[in-house]
Length: 176
Image 1 (cartoon, rainbow, N blue to C red):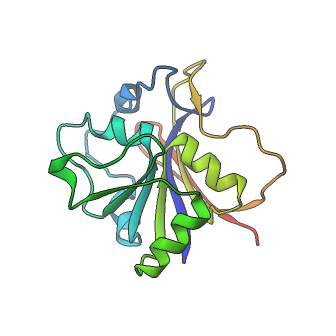
Image 2: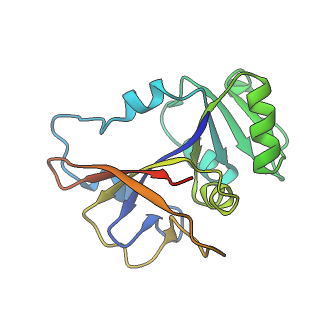
């Protein structure tokens, strides 16, 4: 039972530009179409939890990218679009309530995605492992991966992999 983050940042720690644009994520050369461990990561996951902003960004993709159930934390959305009713559930709940609900449904390993959602889980020390891919770009400003924390949360370094094209991926596990 663990909550995981799998996310990309710029060198200066941003996950998106101020306006939410993530097109810069496609800036690195990847002629071999490496998935950077994403498929293996998803095999370990039972469900995906994301916030409304991330969900709205994913809705703009050409195709729905997830085979797993997606739970969207939102206090403003009431329901998923008709075409995604069997794939997406909108939930207005606090992170701990959501985790309890998903555990009752047999979903133990959760992929937590989206800046605000990751931050809310971190504040409650509910992130167990993070896989952070750093792209060789400085955005200068944008939406940061990490917001202000009231206290430190210690993680141990598990591994770092450098890929062709400049992406560096580091895996951390929370120290209990």
